[in-house]
Image 1 (cartoon, rainbow, N blue to C red):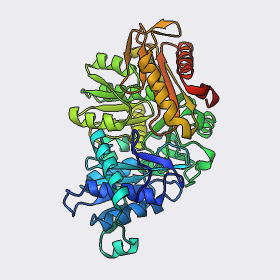
Image 2 (image 1 turned 90 degrees about the vertical axis):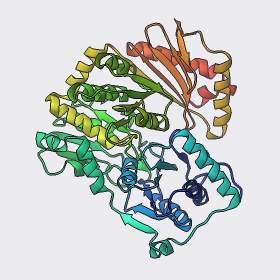
Image 3 (image 1 turned 30 degrees about the vertical axis):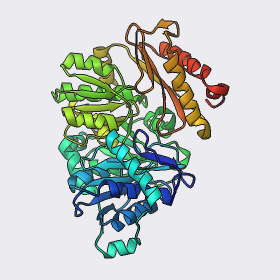
Image 4 (image 1 turned 135 degrees about the horizontal axis):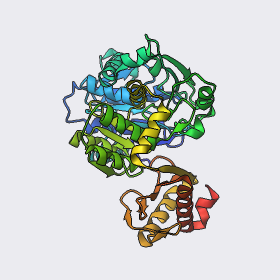
Amino acid sequence: MSAERISFGTDGWRAVVADDFTYAAVRAVSQGVAAYLADVPPERRVVVGHDTRFCAELFAREVTRVLAANGRPVLLLDGPAPTQVAAWTVVDRRAAGGVVVTASHNPPEFNGLKYKPDYGGSAGPEVVARLEEETARAQDAGIRTMPFDDAVAAGLVEVVDPVPAYARQVARIVDVDAIRRRGLHIVHEAMHGAGAGYVATLLAGGATRVTGLHQERNPGFGGLHPEPIAVNLGDAIRAIRAGGIDLGIANDGDADRVGILDETGRFVNQLEVAALLMWHLCEQRGWRGTVVRSITSTSMLDRLGERYGCAVEELPVGFKYLGPRMREVDAILGAEESGGFGVRGHLPERDGILSGLLIAEMMVQAGRPLSELLAHVYDLVGPHAYARRDIRFERERYPELRDALYQRFRASPPTEVAGEAVVRSRTDDGFKYWVADGSWVLVRMSGTEPLMRVYSEATDPERVDRLIGAMAELAAAGLPGGAAVAHG
């Protein structure tokens, strides 16, 4: 068998259902996983989970059929579950690894597969390269499969409920009882995703109430884009502005990312959430250690690092870089701009449910509303403003345009942006340029969608807009046919 080669992006493989994401392709990746694990003792099982997307449970069965046919027993989760819940099951059950059918925050026409090694984090670059090689080999050499019912009859499939073990782990990290007793009113926006019901379940039994929004499974996400950013959270914002709500927690399609709303309905952007989490861990918990953050995340963490004596490391985008480094240095926090956060003592991986509960814990311990806590953090780090602009391309032209953009910036890097001299640059993951006072702008092509993303962090919103606008114009000028303008 021969087919177009499958490549993994910043976190797994994602593609459009019925176009590139097909049963045949899923079986090929699953065979690649089986081959990758060939030297692992055969009794060690693989966790297979899925989110709420179209036919996700059927794709999970295909993964199971291939693994079982290769003699690898499977722990199949009994329903949709967040990616980190599947990952915790890998750790809790000492599994060989895990495969999760999910496209995370991508639009509804996508699905994908994430592979989780035995430590429950994202697969690092070396593992990803091996999986791609084994998948390509499977596409050429063929795939083993067996009927699902035969796999069950042979004792190769165990269906498991992952919630109790995950709830116990969350209670080890977060003071869940204190949140329950406090009597908060929390809105949980599940965005029709795999996190539906989790916040309510974890906080049940006390004075705190959880109002759920979009908790029903809907493979089309009800017309929403399941990414927890302000533009997609209108219903949650309106619910909070109606009054009586202390906190809004929003999760993406597989609930590994978080979006936060304060008691006024203001969206607390993900860079601010990163700063709040670091303040909570360092100030309220007294933790010390290394913090790792993505190149797109905030220099507010650097300022807090100076205050608390914590080293802060900047890495390329993706928990495939952050997670392994968290393990190497026992980092207290891993943070990326997209709302993915990991903390010491848990998985070296994003957990959007846990992150939201940590914000609630912070509020309970401080006895102050979130807006006041954020203002306090800004008092410590000084003025910081941030924005991101996404520019969409035609999918068919994306590789050509991505290559053209990167060639141009490598050949002719800008010496100034929006009239400000560039004093430093970084080009290993997109193109990031700093100006004199530490403000920065970055252009980067997405590894999971046909998007060019332009980011900036500066001292005020107007300056951020100028830097983003200037960088977007520089990028568009180097693309064939004005593609960025045509498809922005």
